Image 1 (cartoon, rainbow, N blue to C red):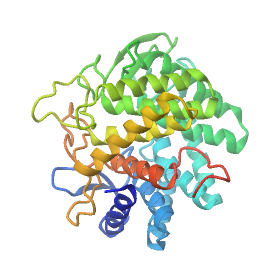
Image 2: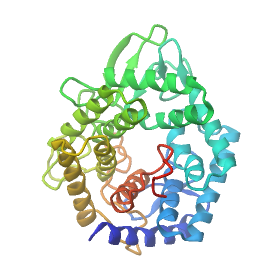
Image 3: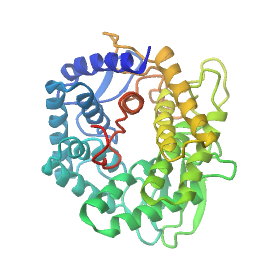
Length: 382
């Protein structure tokens, strides 16, 4: 199945899901092919709007646009009420919803919502520790000095806000956090910690750890994928060679540790035995990161072709062996994603973020539409 055929199959699923989900947001499935739905209680509600905006850009279907606009309105209300926002994933929530609508339609109300979301994310900044705190309230005894690698994908909301407003503070804080993530989350062998702890008052580094990986010293594959993509986006913004090199290091490690079918297990250090869960969502994120990385490598660079080929091989495997291909009974795109194997939460199911990044990867490969992490140039598609 080629990229276009896969996109057309994904459009079928998206169109049917609009009537299934109505005003709610899909989260993960529970082994039955059906998504659990939430109003607003998680970090994941931005991915469905992201799917809708990508689908509208591809199809031009006004019914999909209507659903996308409605989802943005719902997230705007959530921001105004301040519900379930004691975390750093405001970037995931609002880059793929309000910022997406601004990028697609130049809707001023959505632009303002996205800027307000960026301000909300800035409230996670902890000057003493010099970090954006991942989870929980300021001073929290467990999480007050904690960062996680996922946050690299929340920083683009701050990059964008700095460009939109001319206020350098957004960029300053984002860069400090990206630099600190590079120094402490990336290990010397090019693997990564999921989380890292700092002394809340002094910012002194304490130790690396995990929340969802196999062990504190293991390499959780979704975290490694966030790193590939997040550092490539940091390079796009800052043009610092060390961000590009960090993305390349993480990418080489990810590719070298893939199994034969080029789709990751949930943790690179988990015993790979019969029944060990895969994480198709990690591979879909990694593909997007690899395709972003390729954009920053010059023609003739041998790694440019190496990374692109790796991305296409993983996508081919995802399409051939994991994609539901418009199945009328299944609500997700990708089977065999894992949320939290360690926590026993949906270890082998649909993941809405996996679906989003799978669709983004297809759009990058087919239409060169890159998603909603950065403002597009006038010459870009979309």
